[in-house]
Image 1 (cartoon, rainbow, N blue to C red):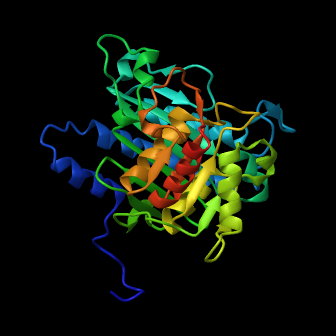
Image 2: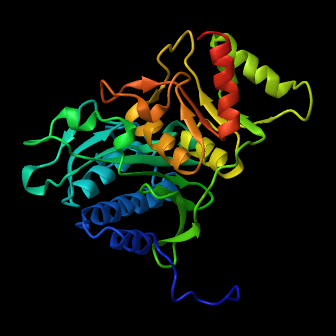
Length: 336
């Protein structure tokens, strides 16, 4: 196909999901409907991100403009977009958002069978300097009888039905897994659809990049210090490159594409880690495992953790299998 030819048979994300649905005769179409609503929210956020500076969406939540109208921060707008679209999908019964202290129960007349955990705008502190930001989500199925309860949200990552993230960078991309590998879809603004551009993404067994916030080196445990030192000053071969954006979506996406390791370890200041389990660690661990990588707390796979609260934190090491195994070996060596 020439560069200027219009593709009349493009593989959209919705088409991709529908084809997957056909492989499961028992499927009701609810998940497809849910993902369609999720994509609409992502398109809304993508548009808002592009207009944030012009529309002055960087203001403090609850502030007012000169007309006395409420000016909402971009992360608040993103949260509202996700909540409204997910509720109106008629396929969810409970939502867990990074922006809300408590679970959000969907009105009874709109309830379905799925729970969605999401961070509507990860890395939002970077918006002002135009660094790539994103949205992260995972989908679980309600397991209890009767009205939904918080226990339905507190499931291990092994029960995830689908997970993914959206990256708002030089283009808007959605990376998604429904349990059958990982695929990447780029938003084509001309038709308003996400087009399959990266089928069957696989992370390299070993990369050449390590990623973590080295500003906290003073608080690292001996294993992390030794690991980073070994990558900077290897006994043989070239040193690893260091890359750290400070937006989890951007750092994990780079790790997925180029290989290597992303780390947000526990420190003496944050002994339980900093990233949230339900809507940051679990979705990214699910994607990484589906792509052939590894995601660990340092002592067990992230997806094996049993959540105890909706905003629970966890340390995380994820990326190329051999790179993660290197740091896990050092953790074991130091008896941590």
